[in-house]
Length: 267
Ligand code: 2AM
Ligand code: CA
Image (tube, rainbow, N blue to C red; front, side, top):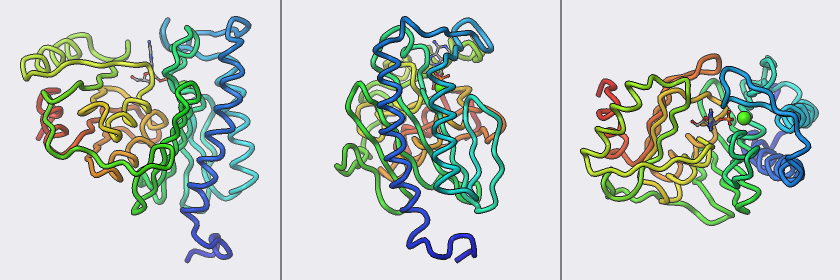
């Protein structure tokens, strides 16, 4: 065990437990902002639908303080602030509100997403949807859970079995987004979208969607969800990294491979 983890019974389990607790507490704070959202002052970041408010900023700052206090040697990558470098090998990958747009317009489909990397690999995650009263958790080798109940993905489904999540934003190429939707419908698929990539990944893990594709997702939107998918028996490939957004494909092996083909990705 690395010297910085000596004294921790199980460094990963300790962090998963903390991530779940922090996601719930952050969710309670976010819910209070949500119920009073008319008092917020959102501003746009990269485009008119890419928004941030004092709720996102305040909750990320609070999460960073809690993580730094409990795990001072860990790094932190988050949506609203610059990266904190660490030395433990663990990096927290956090989105205080995934789905700022649905949050601001009063939809319930937003989440707090807290993922963990160890030596660059996704190893744990907690996704909390306060308005849906759902908490998804997973740690490498420990399975995935929804409100404590184990999740196991349907391994027989194909893209025509039930709906497919698709998360293109204004950062996506209109031509490629259109071509993917056409290809999906030709294959017998039907499209689903809510404003939280983390929630759509959690829905795949919970067999509420057959798969998910997003051409330009950030690591904080998908890090926790990747662990959920893999621990529920599925496959997730993310071609971005901590510094750059990238495409993500998720589903059982068959659905994952079909979504890659339909999106024009190499096999
Ligand atoms: P965010 O709310 O944390 O910025 C899914 O494609 C991702 O895009 C989400 O995880 C969400 O991240 C962002 N998103 C959701 N709805 C959006 C919209 N209407 N415009 C731009 N980005 C959106
Ligand atoms: Ca966000």
